[in-house]
Length: 123
Image (cartoon, rainbow, N blue to C red; front, top):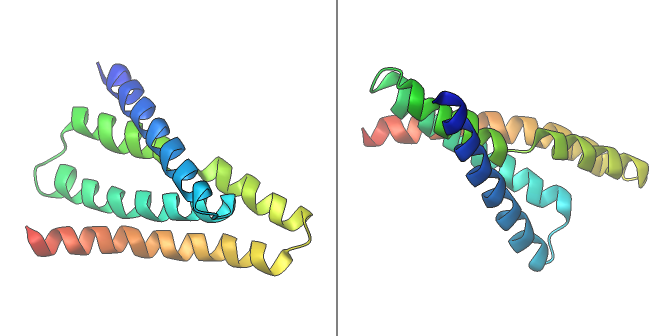
């Protein structure tokens, strides 16, 4: 059952990532920044999901499989993040690449903390 939930969540997360990525590209954003945004939003949402699924209601393994492992695992894009950074380096944009790498790490950790904090505030 958990494998099916991960698969469904993963399919939905991947389709959502694809949609957000294309909307960002339509508005002229570079691929790396669309990925940056996706990772930051995913980090925020995993903070919310962690609090709601694990801290407040006890571990609900099926929801965790669907939402955090499946949906958010497929929505966030570490492999795309790595490729985008490498391409920035290859294009000679070393400063942008370093900012992108470090910025993503810092913003995503802060976004996860914000997700936990905001959710705690409203519960």
